[in-house]
Length: 234
Image (cartoon, rainbow, N blue to C red; front, side, top):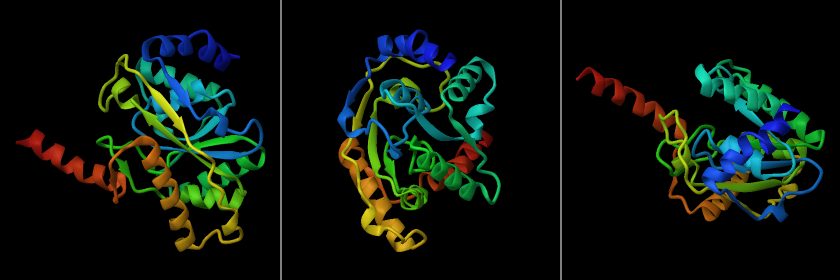
């Protein structure tokens, strides 16, 4: 009930008024049955606008930090994610990746839409980064299609490092489903999984128009942290 109120009476109308979100390619989203929505990841706002614009409920495997952020923004995020059925994933333990995979497969087997960010984290600079193979493992084990989704403009709504959202047009481009049934039974083959992820990232590249970087976003952020500390110390 709280999710319905947020989506239709509270948060949803405000987001629509401020950002005029547009959805292109809605016909590619199945009315029923399990499927993976594989999206680029520009900002925290991605996880709000995508569920807002899609009629079916989308369950994201969200990092646990989104559920522990302090302040008013953190409270709103927690309430929205909990109400929307988002699943917090602890990325700090060794078994986290397998736990996330098992959770995703279970949800897909139950006929749900599962949202996932193949890049693994938000883009540090608006470019599209190399995808991780978790989405491929999940698609192969669950035997479901992968639907590429490109978020455009959300990084202007909630720029990195800011708290207050800003009005800016948002567009969501949904591509045709990618069928990987030809690889059935090959889950665990790293060459097959890499091929699948590269196909997904190429679809996202075409939809989003972003510049592609053949590196993991997390590694780029890892190099940024020491640089910021050095600048503060100088």
